[in-house]
Length: 273
Image (cartoon, rainbow, N blue to C red; front, side, top):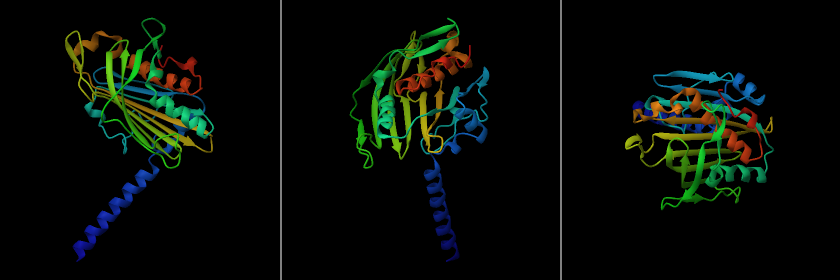
């Protein structure tokens, strides 16, 4: 009987713990230290890239360079060659129109076309995403949101981009909205080859974005984590393989996203010059 009580207590404790984690998951405190929150709220980007065999770089005052694992982000950093984290904050009133802007930016993949990044080679901005478009899949779905009919509570869709360095990349895109917050997860779905050599397998490139609303500050904290596993030495001949270059790619994605919802941070396009 005592053993049964212990088992029941253990199960109850586990469920309670999971519930606590799930309920508090989308809180800026789960992703930002107190100091990082202060820096981000001041308008700075906090950026970090770790590249196996080539070191790490950071800027803006990042205190935790490794992605925060949670219900949505379950992969292990040790399985990837490049791990990037970028954090920040932007002011935006919480209303239906602004929520729709965010949803559109995260799910209308044609908007990715024309994304620019800072090229250290060219010492200026250059086009990163040459083309982007949605592709149909039998696995696509949309789950209705009872609290907001304009934005689904969850959806799955697929898209392809033409990257100026990596060529054609195809992704599945998972979208979630919860109360005032949003989650986007883009995962590479196909194999990628370059010059006849394998570069990526499915799952080798993952992009996570969390948007956490702060009612007191009246704006969103954003947290981006990117993972890349390189299967071929071909990338060693591209400037992308430098941690600074990868940081500039991550920065480009965030600058482009912000601009698409009406927040212009173009002056901070270069994470590293």
